[in-house]
Amino acid sequence: MTPADAPIETTAAPPDGRTRRYGITVPFDGVPMTEHKRWYEDLQALGYTDVWSAETDGLDGFTPLALAAAWTPALQLGVAIIPAYTRGPALLAQSVAALAEAAPGHFTFGLGTSSDVIVSKWNGVPFTEPYKRVRDTIAFLRDALAGEKVDTVYDTFEVSGFRLARPVEHPPPIFLAALRPGMLRLAGRAADGVIINWLSPDDVTTVTPELGADIPVAARIFVIPSEDADMARAIGRRMITAYLNVGVYAEFHRWLGRGEALEPMWRLWRDGDRKGALAAVPDEVVDDLIVHGSYAQCRDRIDRYVANGVDIPVLAVLPFGVDLAEAVDGLAPR
Image 1: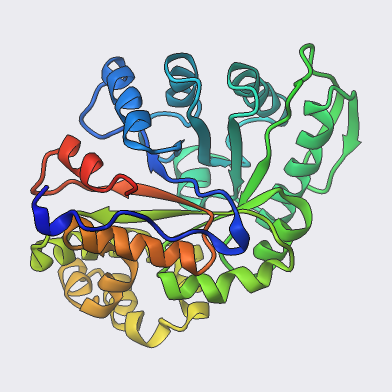
Image 2 (image 1 turned 30 degrees about the vertical axis):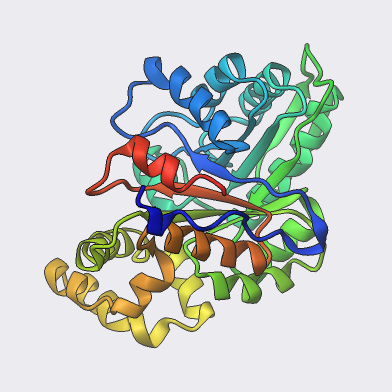
């Protein structure tokens, strides 16, 4: 880190005096899980309070957190997110219960619909009635994790006679991943917190009022710590075309007001012109959605998310052109 990047000494406090948490996404790409013990210990020493996993096309969402619970029990653990469809209800409750027991009071369970690509195309499960599915799953988990016998016909599945043999002494908070108003309002009514992603700091002020409740907000934030703006934008364009052509994200950004800016990209992608779609993503959209620049600039922008209502920023670090350890150190809270 250069002296010019070091002047920040404090970070913005969350609204309403809430305790500041500062997370990062694990496991780190290119680092075997067998080597993560040292990384988890370093994260704690650097001031990161949270490690959050995900479940898309890499490792599952629970195993990296189970190792963190054993190696660094003081860290807060979260998963953003586990799809509501890809495990049966009983197995999902068992997985959540196991991690809650391994990290009592230190685990946040993130649930979401995921997407038709992950649910249907990759796992062969019909992606139907997503709103009802997550609503029903939250209701089931509340009862199952409390040790109750569940004999219930929900709108989207049925559970007959299931009871956890090891009820959870400390049931974890359930956060719901939400994009548009309907799911955001469900999070405000039924969940203990909300997970948001693929949005700018200013978008946070559009999203959070839809919650209708004062619940914690976690946000995954993509960070490329590089002052090579052309390189960062090139990477950002590839990420944006990969994600924002998925239906749920496209509709999210139409709702946020980016329809006009992104329509050329969507049209070219539908026409099969991948190269043209990449070129059609405007610089300002990349700069909105991907944090990049010097370490000080990146931390300042992360602080804007917090100032606008994010309680738990969770960095997804893309260390292009910089050593991973240097990036983790340079982005640590100051």
